[in-house]
Length: 132
Image (cartoon, rainbow, N blue to C red; front, side):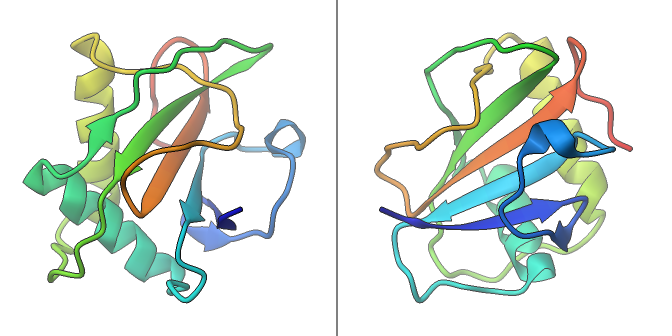
């Protein structure tokens, strides 16, 4: 069972139920390696870096639930240097572009399986991503 680090708006928030959040935007990171705990900014840097370099893959599962959707990203952390420019903008833009291109998955917050070291879930309200 992987350890989960829960981040909402870039801040560590514990493992809370997303339905209770005022702002539904969050990133939920599952690590297979228990020793890979890093700071929130470091995790976001890794996510954006891997997305930008094309190392992230959109998962193939799809599941809808009540009032929000979750985009799940499989991230392969290779320990390389991270790009830090326009962190949140690049993250939101990359995911939004993927949604518009129809290459995304809508999935419920749950346990994921994959070949990468981490799996990311991004939840938001409505049919499209809006960075807040």
